[in-house]
Length: 383
Image (cartoon, rainbow, N blue to C red; front, side):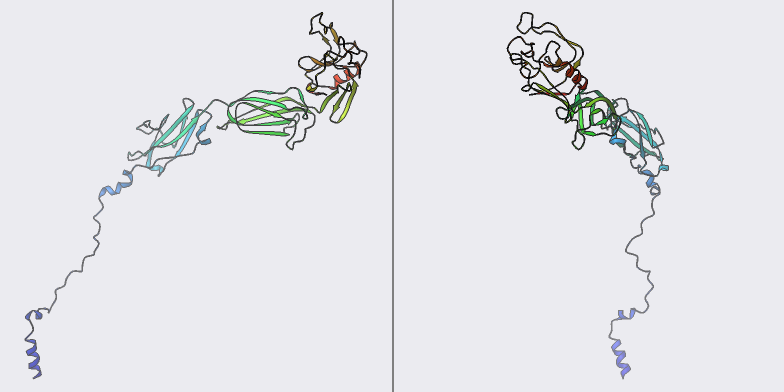
């Protein structure tokens, strides 16, 4: 009964259901990513068909500012040097000058002679073994072959007392440069004072006040100065000159006391009575300096004969000019009276009580001593 019921149930199923008995074997599903096609032959030469990279030019000295027209420029290949056939280069005024079509050298350097001073551009490119040129590399040059010169150095040739004057120094630079001025003792290269001039051009002037770096007066004596200059191309120039002189001497004259003192520092080296200008030809007060020293010397009247101030030629042994219009310190063989009262009376200048024509008369012995002690540049202070 049961078997008949099961069979009866199966008999009612669709016929298609009985077709799933044996399933034929199927190939495995294909991958979702297709493999690439075989590389074409040209891909084997892809590296050689690409042009090489531009060479790398080495930095030039001083940023490309050159002081001479001969220059060597070096560069490095960007790729393997064995893959390169050579280099072509050109030196021109601009960036658009065509480069040669054939290699000029296989060495990564070139020695050039720049035709003239000015701005230049160096360009170089590389050629590989497969005929490909790189882009050019470039560097700029500024050539200035005119040498740096320090011209016309000048200085004060008088002695300088730091308490009353400064010693001027001047020179001319042939081109803009930094400069250094060093004040040197005669027997030493160690400067007592240095002036740094970072940017100087043309005429340069400075004044040394006779003091060291700490502001103290230097010792009396002879000094030199050295000028060292360097321009933007690294070129240097140097000059050394002697002739600076420092003194601590001074001459002080009191018109009221009719007296002269000669000091060396704070020490009185000499004092003497004097006679200064008379009532109509006074001696000028002020600060002066000895300009000349002469022995012997003859005074000649600047006034014509017949003038109230005229005088005959008057020889003296020692004469020290202190004011350029003609005022001297000097001995006066014709005078026998010095000191207070010797310049107070009216009358023709030159008498024992009528004073001088404006000079300072000194007794003969004191005049000789003062002449030997003094030097050109010593201050003369009259009050």
